[in-house]
Amino acid sequence: MQSTFPPQRVDIDLGDRSYPIWVGTALIDNPEILAGIPKGSAAMVVTNATVQPLYAQELLHCLRGLYRQVHLVTLPDGEEFKTWQTLNLIFDALLTKQCDRKTVLFALGGGVVGDMTGFAAASYMRGVPFVQVPTTLLSQVDSSVGGKTGINHPLGKNMVGAFYQPHLVLCDLKTLSTLPSRELSAGLAEVIKYGPIADLAFLGWIEANIDALIKRDVTTLTHAVKRSCEIKAWVVSQDERESGVRAILNFGHTFGHAIEAGMGYGNWLHGEAVGCGMVMAARLSLALGMMDAAYLERLTRLIAKAGLPVIAPILDKDDNAGRYLELMRVDKKAEAGEIRFVVIDGKGNATLQTAPDALVRQVIAESCV
Ligand code: NAD
Ligand code: GLY
Image 1 (cartoon, rainbow, N blue to C red):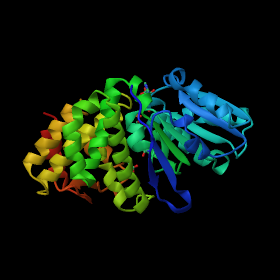
Image 2 (cartoon, rainbow, N blue to C red):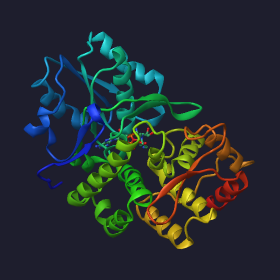
Image 3 (cartoon, helix red, strand yellow):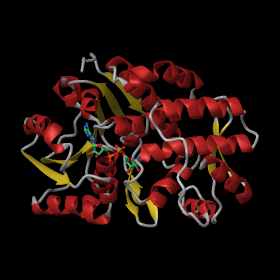
């Protein structure tokens, strides 16, 4: 993979919890970036069994020059391990190594490792600093930024967690060279998401560059990651704890979370479910009269071109729409059992809206064929 230099910086403005997101290659060799890593008595790198052999040694080597003690904990890999039991492995390691509250956690991996490490950092000794080192496209453009941390519950995705911001995010694009194609596509779902909700020009740019993105051209990926982080930083800076506008980042996620939970975590990738969920949410926007059919076709074509599913799965052969509705009622945006969907207007704006069950049932039926 060719290199980009100098690294690009995006700032997320959250008062005394502000931090930079760095996008580039060879980030941990850069003195300016190294200087921003929180100081402490010890570091613990949290990773998983897939990422550890690929990237842990390089990070551990660098951290040994910064901390007196450097530890490593390796979790099992998979969305199905985003649980209390796995989270406890991090606490077991921290306590076994007698880590104090000046210990800095480093999340080295995708969104699953990042969300769990962030939650561990939020709760270990009531809060220790942490750094996100995201190694999937999805985690670089979305999950490592903005401070949502947590784990899944069998009855709902990401239902237990905390808002807790990292001190730094290091998006090293060279890690994407080893990412399986299916995971790259899953990340593209979250990149595409930013177009319809906030920036139609970016949507056009993605359409024009989708082949280069799939081929992992570093210059093209750099722009995609940087622009995605800028949009996310802009939204999160306005509404850190999702009392309003931040909910637009969940475009496609209400349907998507139902697909993930309904299919069993780990069967559909999060990004795949979001990709298909965006088609469903766009179809609902069309049914609500907010946008036209040509825009639905345009989005569907791009999502398919990114290698993502655009036909929704059947979750229950007897009452499919009923099962979707049941799963969507535990969505975090639901209020008093009423589901609120992120819908789009075709002009780069998104809002939250309720919809009659009958209309949602019709959209689900149309989406499954
Ligand atoms: P993931 O963490 O499961 O990673 C995907 C797969 O790629 C895993 O098998 C992982 O081991 C492997 N992998 C990671 N980096 C690799 C690399 N460089 N080379 C080869 N393999 C690599 O999944 P994800 O898509 O990164 O993240 C999905 C998770 O993120 C979900 O749990 C989702 O809920 C969460 N999420 C959180 C937020 C948030 O704001 N906190 C936002 C979006 C998604
Ligand atoms: N991924 C949605 C959010 O961070 O709010």
